Length: 165
Image (tube, rainbow, N blue to C red):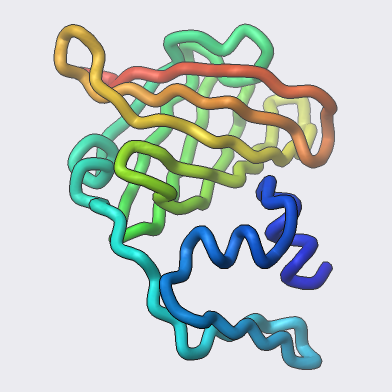
């Protein structure tokens, strides 16, 4: 899949619309014969990552609501943030192991790709777009719209709250 296909898989109507939303200067993407992508002459707009980093980095979250999904009360997500990059691992309940990778898209918004191996041996993958917030008790929260890309169909909405030990 070329770079345009990847941007469309992330929800962009075209490669140009996705690139123009994140670049303040001309951005050139080169795909060489091995399929490796390189960014040249790129200057990205600044997004205040510190708020998201403070609310997510090295914190664990549990499911508050996910009626259409596989993760449940026993699933724990452990997030990490470095600048605009986000990644996590998760497990528990029906999830044997899973991971996510994504990026910050705004002052309180993120997008992620996720994959997991279930306790039934299924391999599933999907996408999500979410908002990072705070609940009435001051605990960080996550609210997502998500969908399956492989292994299942459909999608839904889910919410998560920081797990306090």
